[in-house]
Length: 235
Image (cartoon, rainbow, N blue to C red; front, top):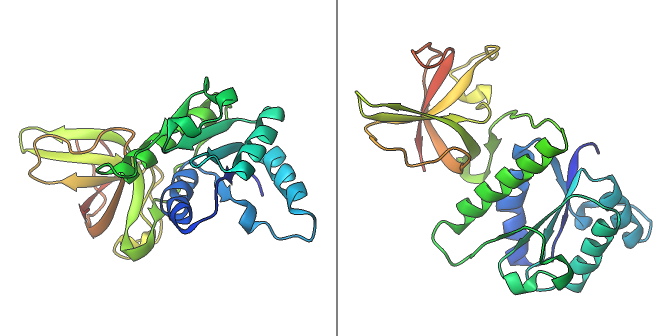
C-alpha cells in the first residue's frame, strides 16, 4: 500500500464510529488510504505487522483518549522511528506527559457540531503535514458517505453581493453519475455549492462540510470562474 495513514486508536463501538465517520473521510480527502491494525491480514505476530505498518506509513494518526496502553506503546514506536504523528484526544490529560509539549487536536464530543469541527481541523492538519513533507495532496472525487451524503473541504468562497448569494468551491469533483449523464470532466472543471439568498457565508475556507446533492447545474463560465457547476444542496 502506498501513501497510507496508519491509525493508532482503541477498538470499541464509540471509537469505531469516529474512525468510520470522521477519520477515514478526512484521511481519504487528502489522498491517503487509512489503515488500522484490525485491517491487517497475515499469519505473522500482530506486533510485527504493526511495527512494519508504522515504519511504512506516510504518517500516523494517534487517538490517545482513554490512555489505552496499546495506543501509547504504538505511539512510542512511532516516535522512536521518528515518524510524523498527528495526535488527537478528547481529554488533554490523556496525552502522555512525554508528548504533551507537541501540538495535538482536542475535541469535545458533547459540543454542538463537534464532529464537523474535528473533521475540519484534522483535514487541515493532515494537509499541512503533507505539504511540509512535499507530498502532493490530490482532491480527486468528493467523498461519498453513507445515506446519500457527500463530504468535501471548502477551498474558495465567492459572494455575489448584488444578488445576495454565496458559492463555495469544493476540493474535488462530484462523480459523473451526479452530473446529468456527463461522460467526462472538463480539464479545469470545478464544483461549487450554491447557497441561494444567503448574504453572508455559512462556511469558511478550510472547513469540511457534509451535504446531499439536490441538483447539479450545467457547466458554465462566470465572471469569477470558468467551467464551473453550481450544486444545489441540503445539509
